[in-house]
Image 1: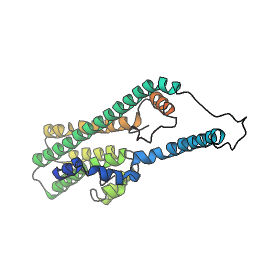
Image 2: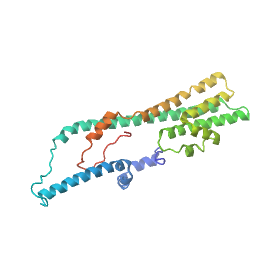
Image 3: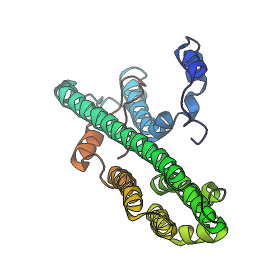
Image 4: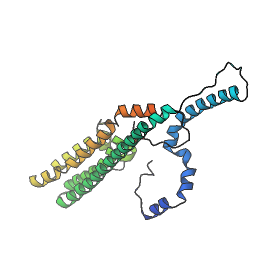
Length: 258
């Protein structure tokens, strides 16, 4: 996943739109997360359907069982009645999933732009001073660069924060950040303390501190997306309605979370 998150360039778009992509997608089917997540229910339902088919064949065609064993039949009416509701549920789930993805993408774009603008203002506002002030400014720029990485580790489960931040922070700062329960806000506190230590006018310092709003807003949106899933009633109802043997091995449309 870490190597597949880069932005597309012109060569990538040419490869993405090529007709050979179907061969590549088919060759990588076994590594698809959607297909891997569908394996257990598909295997279970297929095994159940195979047992029913073998039983009916043994009763009706092969005559392996006595005549008093009845064949198992079911009507297709329940599936015909629930198909429209299932279609509406899948549409809602797909739209809700994409809206969450779109909200997260916009929040991350705004955060990236705000971080870049904040670093630019720090470099343009403070351009001189003693060696101590220069060290504080460099540390401040390191904190600004480390904040998006810390937020990424905060919202993505299984991220290695120590490995991702070891080249961006000093050992002492890294130890404090790793021991903190809320690492992005810990880095924001470092940024605020560094601004207080710089010899800046009060107006300039207040102007820079107003840039923290995009940081806090980005954290709030990311935590909201993680903490509030698609309504569980819809998720449970969709899961229960999908719990039947599929007629064809089609790849289902899944959500990004529950």
